[in-house]
Every structure is written in C-alpha cells, then in structure tokens.
Figure 1 (spheres, each protein chain N blue to C red):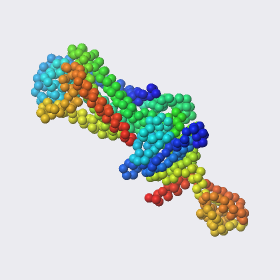
Figure 2 (cartoon, each protein chain N blue to C red):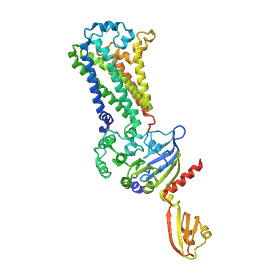
Figure 3 (cartoon, helix red, strand yellow):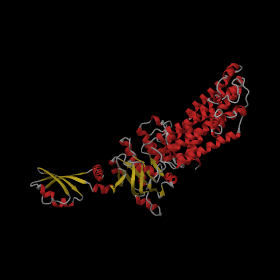
Figure 4 (cartoon, chains in turn cyan, orange):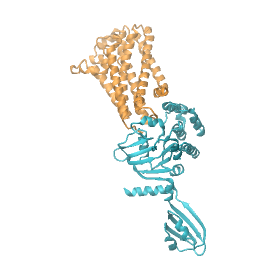
Length: 312
Length: 270
C-alpha cells in the first residue's frame, strides 16, 4: 500500500505519475485532450477505456516515445521530455502492441534488454521465466502471441522497477497466466512499487486496482476508487415475503429505491446507495429471504460510457 | 555502465549475421568472377575498337572515360567493377540496411521496446549508423582481398593501394546514399520515402556524372556529385585519393548528423 512506500522515504511525496492538462493531437480524431491526473506512489491504477480512447497515446507520452502537443507529464517527479532517460531507467514498460526481434531467442531478447538497461540482476528474471513457464531457448518467431506477451511481462518486471507501466498486460494470456501476472503485479505493489495499467477488460481492473481512471474519446471522464465506484452501483435485490406481502407502492416510496417489480410474494428491487432505509422499512413485514446481486463494474462502466456519449 | 554502450550495435550485427554472410559470399564470388574473366578480354583489341564508336556518355558511364582501354587491366576493372557493379552492390546493401534498421524497426514495432529503455535516441541512431558502416566496411575489405587474391591468376598486375583506393571510393559513395537513406528514414519513419529519395538520387546523380563532361552547363555541377569524387581519376589508376575520400567522409558525417537531428525530436510511430 502507499503508506509503506511513504514510510521508507523522508522525501516530500511526489506522485508516481502526474498529467498536467496533457494534450496530444493527431489531426482530427485521435489523441487525448486536457488530461489531468495524479497517480500516487505505491498504488495500482487502472486506466480504462475502449480501444482508441487514448490509453496508448497517454502511455507512450510518459515514455517520451511521443511528445505532448500541450500540457505536460511528469513521471516519478521528472519531466517526461527533459528527463526521459532517467525516467526510462527507473520504469518498466510493456507496450500495447508488443513486438520482439523475431530471429532472437527469448533469452537473447531478455539479455539484450537487460544490458540496454544495465545492472539487471538475473535472479528475478529467471524466477519469472519459470513461473510463467517460458522456455528461454526458443526463437521468438516460433512463439504464440501468449508466449510473446509473457516475455513482455518479464522484461517489464525483471529489474523490479519502482513504476511499472503496462499497456493491456493480459491480452492474449490464458487465465492461468493472467493469474500469475496478477500475482507479479501484487508483488510489485507489496514492495511499494506503483503499477499503472491500461485495460479494456473491467473485471481485471476491478480485481487488482485501487483506483481507476476512465478515458473515452481522449477525455478522462471519471477518476474514482474501485470501492466508491462499486458503492455507487445500483444493486438488484430480491425479497421473498411471507404473508401479507407489501404493496409495490409501499416499497417504491422508500428512499434509494428506483424500481419495483412484484410477482406474488417476491419483490425485485433496484436500489442505489445505502441499504439502510430499505432494511428499516421492512420491519413490519415477514421477510423469508433476501438475495442481493451486486452490479458488476462492467455495468457501471457501460453506464458512464453511455453518459459520456450523451455529452457529445 | 560500459556494458550498454554498444549493445544496439552488436544486436544489429548479430541479428543480421546470416544476411551478412550471404552478402559476403555473393560479393566475393562476383568480384572474383569478374577479375578472373579478364583472361577472356585481354588482347582482344576488337572490343576496344567497337567501344571507341560508342558515344562519350556511354564510355563515361561504362567507366572508360579519359581514354582508358577496356583491354587494359585498369580499364577492364574500372568498366566491369568499379564504375557499376561494385557501387551498385554497396548502394543496395547500405540503403537496404539503413532503411531496415530504422523505419523497418519502427514499422515492426520493436523500436518502442528498445527506446523505452534508458538509451538516448542519439546513441540509438548512431549505433545503427556504426553497424551499417562496419558491415559495409567488411564487404569492402573482402572485396579488396578477393581482388588481390584473384588478379595474379588473371595476369593483372595492379597494386593493393589502387584496389584499396578504388574500393574505398565506391564504398564511400554507397555510404553517402546509405546515410542519406538513414537520415530520411530517421526523420520520416517511412521505408518508402527513404528508399525512394535515396535510390532516385543515386540513379539521378550517377546519370548526371555520366552526362557532365558532355554538357557544358553541367561542368561545375559535377563538383557537387558524390559520384564525381568517388569515380573521377579513376582511383583504379590513381590509387588512394585522400582529398576526394575525405570529402565523401565529410558528406557522410553531415548526413549522419542530420539523421540524429531528425530522429531526436520526432514522435515515433507504433
């Protein structure tokens, strides 16, 4: 958690990533517009959005592969353009569309990248090779997409960087290897390192991130903790009543209830926010069972996404 | 961190080693074959009589300007090797190398991965340039050695310094256009533009070099033509012409500087 990282250093706190009205335009449509964001040291931040929303553009700006049109980005307190080499020394990066040198072996690629970086201790790399079941002596051209992606993940983590930037890390990985990747991310987090990952797959982010930023059409439309997002979620509740069951209009008047559907003794309700008013209002009735379904983050996302569309 | 200094340079040569071996074999075979074929031309004065009827432009383009005879060892080698075959080998090899290693890597997407590591763009492009220069120099050295090994068999008596001077000259012509391709590819990220600009200029300037002695308006112009500085003399009779070579080296350095400048501030493609 962020606190352990903070405790280790007496330096004033700098965010791991700070976007200052970052804009990158490419002609008419693509790019990002006026992004403001702070990612704290030690947190796992999920950067969510549909394909083409500007996730990769933002990430490539952080690594100085492309330069801001206006605004700025700082990484570990350093300017993304001026101090790029120092940033890249301290960051691990997995590109969204990973490409590796086809005729080299896995080992060759990892050794080359390790030497480019300098001072990489091979033990963690070898451990990751083993945990991700990678055969180091096969040539890249003989590997499946999933196996290539594993190499991308290993090279992003092998030097135990204080900030890892992952563009769609689990794309192409089977569920077992996704799990290993989440574990590796968890280890980085426990070591006090920051992880910034983009995804268009929500359950993934819901699982491993503390906070999410949702980007759509180049604009950041929401930054919120996963917890709060879930709290804001509409819950579905099914109540089985004994006799006599309340009338639908009795239930509809309860604060927070947005929708009531009765069939016989069973009421299906949609509720937003706290459940407290509902629970208190139920005391006069005989309640046989209550079942609640939490809305998956997916639906919240779609909701936000729709709202975003309406603004256009 | 001394270990990282030339990591990209060695990676490029390692990845290309198969292709380099192929080019070496092809170059050695071709050069050797051409040198040995002199036995078929030697003493056949009818060739010379026939060629003397050709227009001056053709003689110049064929490497037989300035009264060189095709039946003499120097005239033969200049017309068969140094005025066309060898420059072409270096041009194709070096331009393709440059484009492949810059715009090619960018198109593949491996550039993103490499440059997300702590290596400056300046160093990256200079290491690519160094790899291209070294690989080309390897071919040049092999060519000289092949000439020296095969010419006694063909009854040719030409000194190593003449071979070296003539080979260095055409290698540097190739390097001028290779570095031009590097600069264009580094600045644009486009394989097509880099190939187009460098090969069109190479062909155009080669033709201009042939035409220059015939058209009075072009006389001064051939002084800005790399082919003039590489082929005039010709080096196979004059040997190492230090000034001309130095001039070509300066052009190469300026173009390498342009490659660095063009690559430094640009957005890289995915």
